Structures are given as structure tokens and as C-alpha cells.
Image (cartoon, rainbow, N blue to C red; front, side, top):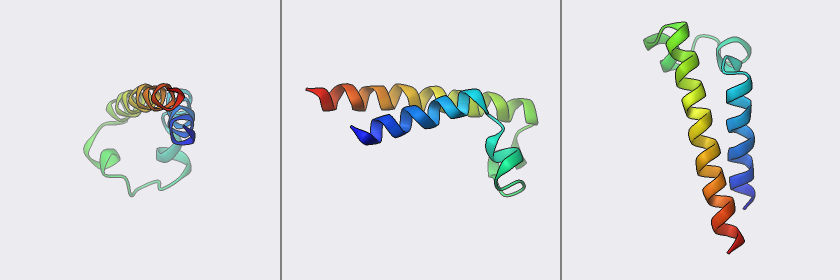
Length: 65
């Protein structure tokens, strides 16, 4: 259950601040930053955030049963 909650929290963080790893941490080490344009990287991080939220929600729902 806690894993699902953590995934949801990271998903929300990625939706709110999709540039968190690009500008705050690991500025030049992410492969996605080297392969994608800044706009494409923002879209990638937002999609990843949505995927984390969906996966976390499923895990929380499954743990409640």
C-alpha cells in the first residue's frame, strides 16, 4: 500500500514540476535529456507522472481488498 502512495506522490511531483531532474538534480546525466528536446522531455515526464499515478492507484486499490 505504501508503495502505491509513494508512486502517486512521485506522479504528482512529475506533473507539477516536470523539470525537477532536468534543472535541480543530475543536470546533464539523464539519457532522455540528451535524446529529447526540452519540450519533448516535459511531455515525457508528464506522461511518466500519469503512469505513476495510475500504477500507484491500482496498487492502493489492490491492497485495500
